[in-house]
Length: 129
Length: 129
Length: 129
Image 1 (tube, helix red, strand yellow):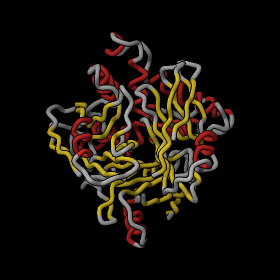
Image 2 (cartoon, rainbow over the protein chains, first blue to last red):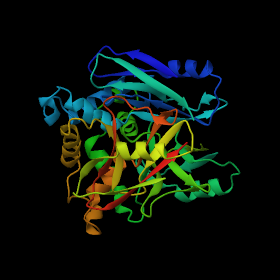
Image 3 (cartoon, helix red, strand yellow):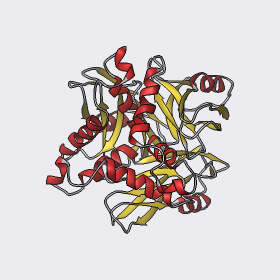
Image 4 (cartoon, each protein chain N blue to C red):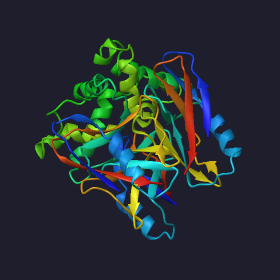
């Protein structure tokens, strides 16, 4: 199963929780957990709060400060060396427990695509395991 | 299956390896791997050494230095902006291989709850997959 | 299933994608996803680009700058405090979706062992789940 996301900024945290839930609801597959995975090298998956949007901004601020643009060897080929480093630290996927085929997420947990080299079209693979 | 952990400090790395092993021993479920997952947005799961407790202190020192308290937008609502950023970087879960329903961990690997906004009561979900 | 890797430098990113693919090809097991896991506390698994080797160097540069050698409490016992912190941030494992028992990886994604305390002999566990 797969979700398509169009990001609109260079870096951006896009809440995909409802899209993942909808995808699971429409599926007949059953399992113990759900893998959310991006087949890309300059974005990742984060699970954190999305009620106060400031949390998303804080995460991006931290990554921008620690991993600034324009100081990487890969920038000689493509101007996204920082995006690759950010994606390596965050990771392309997260595994979430399922109970009765529903995500077991805490009250303050949302699933987000973390874009580090947008705007782009991104694929998010959802795999029940 | 679930473990309950009472943390006692604002940030703290709590070894839960034995509690996870005990939970698996008491379970009749069988599987290929085990997901350890916290349904919280200000703590995470780390796998690393716990024989020399200094390793845990070093990890907390690193995170405190990189992600200091009190400089985040979310602090206007709740004074734990740093805790959310730390939890986003560490991640809420880890997957560990199982062999004959026992954790395949290296000699120097322990499973820990990494608390970033304690003291709190924390749930750790254990899911055989 | 298991792969053995001999690393040759103190820190190094070793592409293991082809070895993982070969191992899966030789296996009769079937599953939904594949866990790649190191049973070690001073190395980790990263998924990112390996076409331009500069990306690997950039990731190591970032980690060396943020987590320098020789300033950790654990260094009193063993001179690899930084290696433990790096491994805790990167994590010991990643889960990748499978489709017809083949890894679902993006065009720019490679699987790598990230060595932070080499040269050493490393085990990489491959578990179909």
